[in-house]
Picture 1 (cartoon, rainbow, N blue to C red):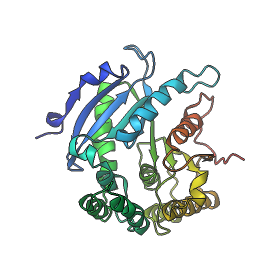
Picture 2: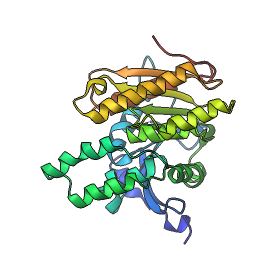
Picture 3: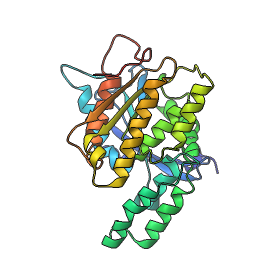
Length: 314
């Protein structure tokens, strides 16, 4: 059965969120199905010009947070942002109920070292009864069988063409935003030189090993003198993560700083990168400000191409 035959529209969502339409799409590359929510800008009409498109990950938890926030930012009176079409990707059915397990398959790069800190971090949930032994074992198993390369191929070769067929999309202005393991995936797309994205936001990226595939791919590109113009990159981290009581987030912070250090010492040619520390937020609460930071940094109306120089704000 073809991808198109397994695609299903859900127009009833428009009764709840007028600017958002949802559908499900089966991926032959991943071997699974995804829920996709498409949110158009305020005032979007049939005669509008082609618009940027922004892909946002972890749709089951982030659609209700990010899509309305982006729409409100487009209406800001003094610092408006460029309107864009947001495509939020998540799961439905059993996968939605077990998204912590399934996202490990999709958002973690293949070959990523096993994150022992994650196993230790999740174990107390079993003891508290909020996670069953079966669910815990399934999550750990998927961390050893990650396939972020197939999920990236799904976005590039299966999902994006569908979006271009149905909405007026600027093919040269495609963005990607991810938080936590979504941020890890965003950095994987960046480090492996995906040609789809012109803008990438990686917030609190879940890099949990100094031997991460992110570092290996980035170092390889530097060693090979890769002169492919990289996407505009924006990084954020929450200040509390650096001194968190949880070892998982302290490890994340150490590797985030190692990533920043690599990019500052040996930037890819033509890289324009910015970074911001989100103050007063934890890993669990920082998503809204992280999304705002990325959108303000990369979509605020400007009169120049942002992908021309390395820039780190003071």
